[in-house]
Image (tube, rainbow, N blue to C red; front, side, top):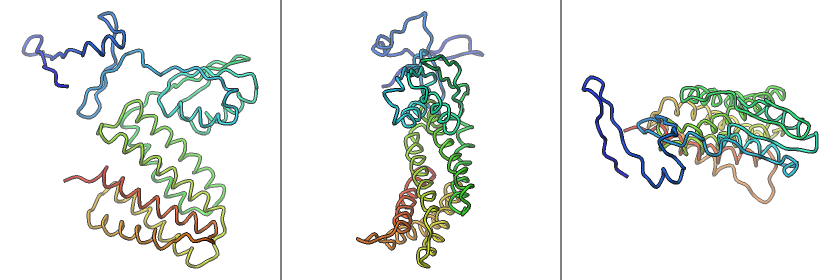
Length: 286
């Protein structure tokens, strides 16, 4: 939809206005007494109703007693700012508190009664913060991939999940500065989470075969190159490592009889190979 700009005000303080589609105005119940939210996202201006549709939800915790972590994580990632959680079972309160502390940056329980609690976001996300946190979680993933200490792996994995949740929340609420790449970043975050899970599960398996140890060494190297390529894209380096990761994925074959180590190594090689597709799409420039 194209709209004409209208100049207003004196030359030295001129501004421009644009009319909003009447269909959208009516749908959102807007009029001259209301305000809208205006955000600059890259080279785009995004206008939304100030009421922030979807920012407050009501959940019956007893309905999701076995899946509370998925529900709260989904609400958080979708950008909801306030949640009223009703419950009869007091265990819901304890579990909710643990989930918020371990996985949901910025969420706090601000009100607690005997049969409900209120969860609110007390932070203000920003585009610059996304860049910093994204890089931090990538580095933590490298740390996880190379660690053999069970305690360190557990702590790092927990931090990675918190940061991934936070980055995905920022993307949903504010988008990325390169607006059209927002869903691609969301997909890449999902892939990074899967890679972290595979490294964590692999750490619980004793690797005895020399070939598997060699595979793990190669995978760690390819993962580190993924980080380096993402932050300093080089076509020749990219082309070589993609071929290497593709060959490695095919070399670690899954037959009828495979052990757990082989399964996780194959999954890592496969997901990291796909990760390089994300890296090209997001970082390549003419």
